[in-house]
Length: 112
Length: 114
Figure (tube, rainbow over the protein chains, first blue to last red):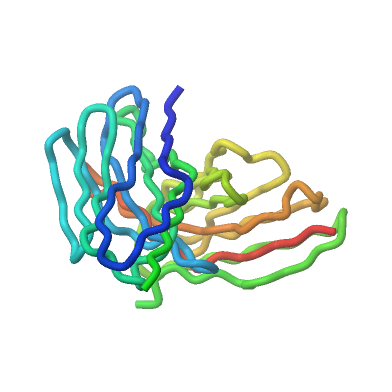
């Protein structure tokens, strides 16, 4: 069964304290792995798509990496405005309908 | 572009009532999706559509129904509301192709059934 697990469930950082969020996945062939940011009371906002092991993508203080079993979202020198829930999702290569399987998310709080 | 819009933002239903959650996208995406999000549970797919006139069940379809008469609109119908349907509902759209398959989400509808 295709599955996505994110850890930790919650993470508290001081401003400037770098860390990483983990997304472990089990899927019968990976078509793509997606990272989203979700602010309270809002819909998920697309951040990155990763397609193959070894791929990396960056956006401001965020960098996403991908291996054959997991993805990391590295946050460098975070600021309070980076506080949000970060969602990971995968699309299986067997799916031609864009269906995504989501993890439960990691809630990040960055204190000034 | 407004992207994906959803109405209403909030709704309280009594057990047994029915309602329709509206979703519209102006990006000319062929694929549309309905998810529900419960605390600590992630997003679960309810129904999806790959184009006008074509819909299919997702992971948790029971108690819901959909239709897709146009590319832009994808309403979700709740019949005989139950407390288990208390959740936040998100509509999403995407232009799934060979490589690009990210989904874009609306702001959500928070539904309470009492």
